[in-house]
Image 1: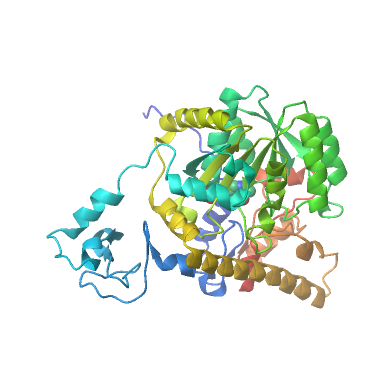
Image 2 (image 1 turned 90 degrees about the vertical axis):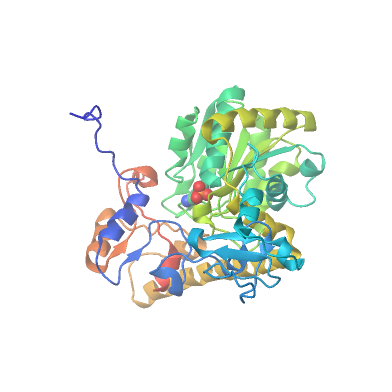
Length: 454
Ligand code: PMP
């Protein structure tokens, strides 16, 4: 028999499990509202496209136009205006040939030139330029913390990896190892922090009666947290509720946390997606950095650059002084090295190329705004449609909530009915974020509003 015969079947992840069920459904009109990935009508049933401007970028450092000049150019990602770029179909990678633009002869095996250049290992901390630009994006170009070199930033495996590295760092170097997470929160949060070595507690966040923020409960719970405790805050577009504090409420949260010495750990998975403005969506974070205090920041480029599978993100730790930041970074390396050695190069290169180029950056913000606006108009359409049909209940939470997710207030029977009759898939199970919601006595679901466009 197998030495693993005793291994029991693990349950599906509550969110990704929805996709498993969805994939098994042969219906041609099925819709998956489980996973938080931006879709448009064109993209809804097929695979996820790259955002348009990302498409025009190829790997590392370069931009493309869509006409082939170079005789080698072929393939989907393809072709370059200055003939510096090249896709070799067989390996589907993009190669850089400066010698072509310099009018030099093409070597026998041109791709070797590129391979040696751009497929090197990154340092443990990732692409330095990417790290700098990422900190600037979230904290603001004029952030005193950046100017004073008080921020230690490391490239990590998207938002999840950044949270995990942050957790492991805190477990090793921060005396108060309790983290308070909102109730409810993204279903992976408690697992990431527990396995990262922290002990997880919750603070009240969502009020099912108003389908809004339980601000009083939040303040009470943070007030009674032990001094020094870590507090996880969603920077914007809270997942899964779509409920964010107002700026005034953020200020009260900040004052309370600073007065009690609570350590903020921000999760920013949706910068630009909530309001359509990168700066507006970073306001909560910037308030906490402006007061000179310390905090952690986990950034993801999955949603706002459409780079889901590239796994590109960053962990920043804002410190009191530059010398602390240097020592913190040295310890982050000791966390990362035995975990995965160093992060992948491709996605970080794309992000850096966009962030450092004025024109590309502008194009990105325009496209981001269009995405945010589309999400907002989808909410309105859903709300109007429910109203027009005289659907019982108050659905105003759908237009009040922010970002990709909404709590519909549907119970598990209603969700099962929608799946069975209409092939619409959403979460409603007893684990992950669903479980936290279930505690309120109603099994709410959240879904990706974008998919309602179909
Ligand atoms: N935090 C939150 C709140 C999220 O919703 C997500 C993605 N669903 C993540 C972090 C991490 O995503 P990723 O690892 O793909 O960047």
